[in-house]
Length: 139
Image 1 (tube, one colour):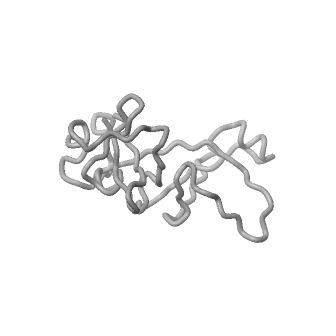
Image 2 (cartoon, one colour; image 1 turned 135 degrees about the vertical axis):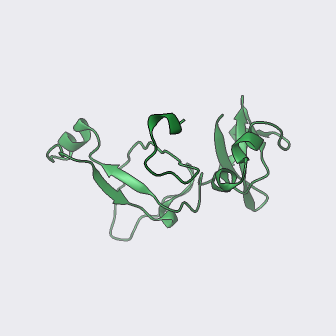
């Protein structure tokens, strides 16, 4: 199941992708859906009037995550291109929720910046309390 958060009527709503349509769900965003009791099960069926994907305005997937952890220099080519040694351990850093934007939102640069460096990102969302989970609990 593919989920997103889409802007509608001055707000946002979680939506499920079905073919080339987004099906609005009964949650303000994907984060709210994941935090709700049985949210994923509810997301799999039902929903509102389809929104054509090509006309949808995608928003920040989870606008208020509790924590954002990032891994830097997490692949060899990136470290080499930056002229940095391959780290022995993961380089971890954090981001703040106010730095998140939707995929087509304008990017506002600080006044002392004149260019943007892009990166491809992978996001893993853990939608429930999790500590010392083994492989069987990670499904």
